[in-house]
Amino acid sequence: MGAHGQGFTEQQSEELLGILKQRFEQNEQRHEKMGWDNILLKLNENPEKLAVLHRMEETGGEPDVVGYEVETGMFLFCDCSKESPTGRRSLCYDRAALESRKKNKPESSAVDMAVELGIELLTEDQYRTLQTLEEFDLKTSSWLETPEEIRERGGAIFGDCRYGQVFVYHNGADSYYAARGFRGIVKV
Image 1 (cartoon, rainbow, N blue to C red):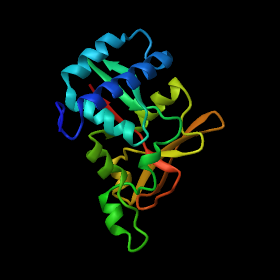
Image 2: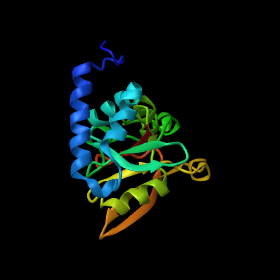
Image 3: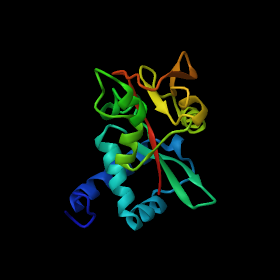
Image 4: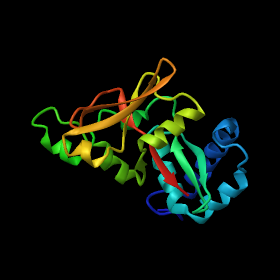
């Protein structure tokens, strides 16, 4: 099991910290004026969050620091893969949508997988903020946390970036596409 539990070994932990540090240093525009040492300290104090980042990395998310919450003193890690994470595509929106499909069901849903990974789907606001750092989802799209009033009517929202513009649109929550996944956020 290793020191970090959940099948996450000390060696995997060291490798992941190396990847995260390198990504942090190569993408300063995402987190100006934040020092890696402070983040490393937080990660070492919260091994369960490091395990979450490991799962994000394993599913193609390429997590990186995108913000800091002054009120909580926490760093925000978000999936920063150029396109929607490859290990999290072809998913309908949530469990209810999955169960409503009579045939050709996808393997899982974005909401269920986010819970499994220990992350939250991005809200529309978080997604738009992420897109101000650089352009993401130029060929893919990402499910977003859907407001209850839309979900109650059978829909769900997703975002992408086309023609230099961020678009948020809707689909039936039970739909799924090879080019649609989801991005998540975790606070450390």
